[in-house]
Length: 512
Image (tube, rainbow, N blue to C red; front, side):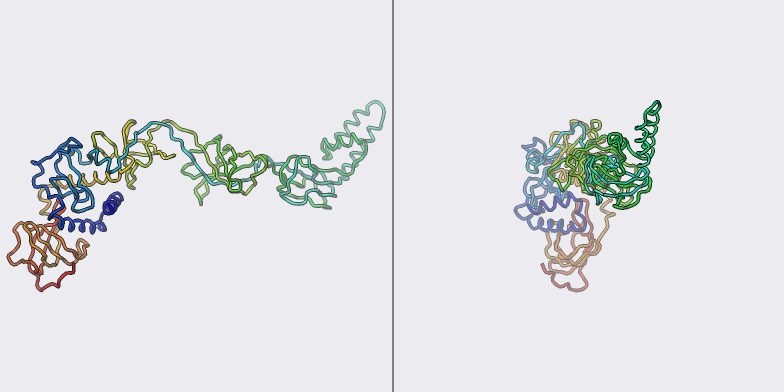
């Protein structure tokens, strides 16, 4: 069965050409040597001696080897060319050259399985690489609201974690001292209209840059506070540090930039060809190598309108809840997106589709052991199923195993039919080839010649049979003689001599 497996693989791949010719001729030579006993004899008159296949219940025209379709046999048996059984050709299988008829017994031997064309929604999946980044909407900036000095710093390095309300720095602001003294002086005054003066003095403290908490601290303490402590407005990490102990503060100077880690953004790289599958609001699952056992839930918030010219990808911004702060910016992530399910479409198993490069084909089971290759137009593919847009209908059955062998048999059958339909002048116009060789044997219908290489066919040296010319062999031709000859290929695939004569000089014996 090794030979059969090799030939089926070569036919399915469409590679039986110049390289496959040697295999074909090897089988022909083997077949000629086996004609004497074990192999079935060629059919002499297939039209008038039809037999019945008991398993299929149909009339059999003849049996043949799919690898050598031109040779016909009048009874079943093992092929003389290949290590496989002959295949029957039925009387009702000639209407369509593309159809293939296979008996139930042969279907079982080949392992033919079918699946029904169904209607459903294709659940597509999309996995994309990504990276973790800060959530730029969860940011707080602490600035100097007036001039002063940094006397003490509690956070000294970038990326230090901080909690909400944690002290960041202690600052001294001379301008705030004058505003506080004015306010406290007004509060000590008694008399009508002092409340309005106190309110105005309080407002001047706010205008000087003090916040409400600092003003309330002065009100409750009832004394001047020359130093104030800045605290973190949110929890997170110090993304940027602009303060140092002893430095002079300028109004508006950035002291701390804090990024929260309660949620992070994951930028997923979406292939340009699949960008239409991603929509804002799609739920996603995020995984990282650092926490392989954890699945982080997120949601697509935007598909950024920019294509990377190097990778041809778009970035999808995914908002991911970051419980425990496990995800940190710069981490690699794998993002599983679940695109929205579309309308119902025709679906077949992906293994049923044969892709030849220019065509996409499925083998349809038309019933009663008949199979037909059909061109289809495919759509999206996911989860082992392929969308079919044109070519088949719901409820039909398609072949999902051994379809390559059936497609090859269909192609060979169609080729044989086309050759049979050619006019008789084809043989006369067939190209002839020249060769030099030695006569090994002379039979009733053929002569065996061991010949040198034939450049026009890219043949190497070999021994093979040629059909006798219509006028027969010249009397001068005998076994062992060196000859020059011309031959052509007949429409049944065999080679026939068109002329033969003795060579000018004796040719050395060819090694077998």
